[in-house]
Length: 365
Image (cartoon, rainbow, N blue to C red; front, side, top):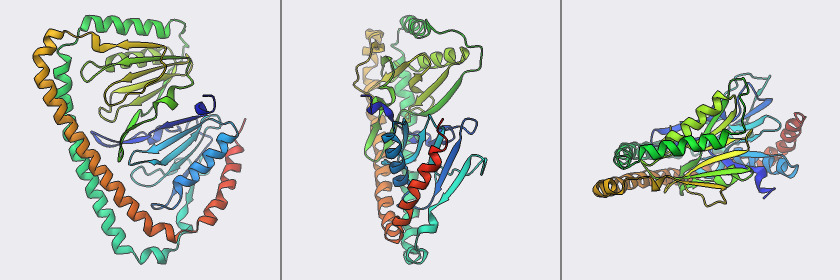
């Protein structure tokens, strides 16, 4: 478990019911950063491979690493971040273009375009343009389905919520806040939070890495919930309380409802709080389990079951239609990579890796 906890896997951006949504600016803030390397280049040119190799080497040196995965290909990386060194390597290409804000002082660009055979790529110009247009079309369709799913989700949520016992809910919320913050004091400073995604809507379905996010926290809370009988208000109040006390928080959002927080990490208290539901569920040895699904008026719920089932069925049809088009976009992207990979000088790119590692390690304390 110790080695496993050296590595966290997260999503910095996501395919969501609001379209593509990015928290890229929160991977590592400019105010904290020592060094941010923005890697530019086309598909299949080695951006993710560089990050994986650098991350693997630094893990072997016992550094904790955050791997930030691409929601359109969870096997590929959008970034890595080394908290102890305050260093990040990021994919600076579309749809999450990252340009230097403090060039030379903090930011640097690595352009992998200088290592490709331009003439070889240009021979496939028409095919590349056609694939890019079709990929854009697939993502447009995916987001149309996901945005339609959002409307049904809102109906689903409103209907389910009618059976919630508000009095019991408030008791549970207040008791959780009391327990989490019982040994915490007001730090007399402004709290800070970072936002990322708890899980991803990806070409292979719903993908989550929660076990890597919470594994090294001493006290782990799980809140069992469902649509409408939700932890959303509880999580918002926990965040508000933590910020008021001057604490730092990592908040992991849901791509199904972007404003909803599904995981909270409170490193200064050594506490994690996670929402478990039918779309984001992780079996884990939690210290405390809170079951919100028990605080419903079953008589009210029974009268609404037909509506609830209709909303759930339609929501999931639209959700998985959207995921299907994301999968089609991924297949097109894989084809696109075939026009770049044979035209890359990967030997020269691999020679950059020890140089990058040496530069990163210059920031060790």
